[in-house]
Image (cartoon, rainbow over all chains, first blue to last red; front, side, top):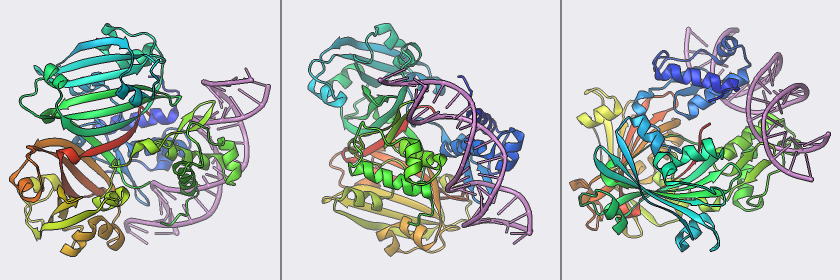
Length: 239
Length: 239
DNA sequence: GAGTGGTCTAGACCACGCG
DNA sequence: GCGTGGTCTAGACCACTCG
């Protein structure tokens, strides 16, 4: 985590202060002018940091008054945005186990061709993994990666974290994703790999993931057992 | 919609251009310097507009290259963020009908006291509405509003849009919300008001809505029939 | 090397809340 | 009236891409 950025460093410091309670809920931060003095920087740089805090639900800026610290403990968590299962389970501190159920390189099915904008000649990695949490197989992750962008992949990498490999080893920059959450009927595959406990439906999170150059490189279906699914979001109104 | 803001006006103009296809997908926008010339403004102001476009999934900024137009038609659209049912059904253009099933002012239940941080002496409005789409009752919305902030409310207002009343008539500013999506077993109430078609579970969207001064004024449960629920999101990684 | 976006600065004026 | 955050400016330097 390199931080050449002044505004990011300030954001981090203030966010940590709020998370750890040095800055109390419902009190105001020092004013932007004070902060620019304290951090020996310009007011616009302070404002960049504060806007980040506001976007992420740490503070609420009120014109004429100040920046009020919000209660971030009640948020019970950023499952929002782009987070991989590996990062997620570390955050939650639950015991979890990943099993690679299927792994291979091949021609895309028509559905996958459509999802990843591929031609019949392209090749894709297919990775199917189950996630066991507290003794039960709860989540089935089906990943499809365009070989153009990921020339090489192993089962061992998939047992750890595909994202780590992509970002740290391949140095590809994951930039954004379009996410869709729906509920569907369980498939035979769900029954095969998950402990479904007579549930007839399953929550499906479809993700189209894009790199920094806007190329679509991955399609993911994350299939969650109904009773264990939870999505939390922080949203601001208007702009 | 008053627009004293230069950067918001520029954002709107560019966003419209992208939505209507004047600016083609995968091409770059004019550079920030060009735009600041075209709009007779400073580069920082242009950058504010472009950053908004990036946040909302219209463009991808790439250092050294430019701002690439993304395919926004595939996004099928912002159920994300804070959107009321009224706005939503207008966007989708579907025929829809709202029925107020229960309406009243009273003491909060223990559960609602907890959700809204109330004391036993506070009063809350309870509004239960069903939403009929294409002939079926699909959604049950249960709203609880703190009377401190909403002193007066009628059944007629609830048949239209509570949000419109709050924002346009009361001039209160809704600022942010914490949203949670889970799946639960259907209650008797769900069976009573919705056409459930033998589904045993229901998607519950819980919303805690805050005003500009950070006060919590509304708790909402939006209960959606499984097969009709869909949540779409655009997410950027890191910051 | 020329052009791009990313960061930062030091000022300015405004709208708003509060006493 | 004073302090707050919101907008805007005109410049600067940097890191990056690409020919």
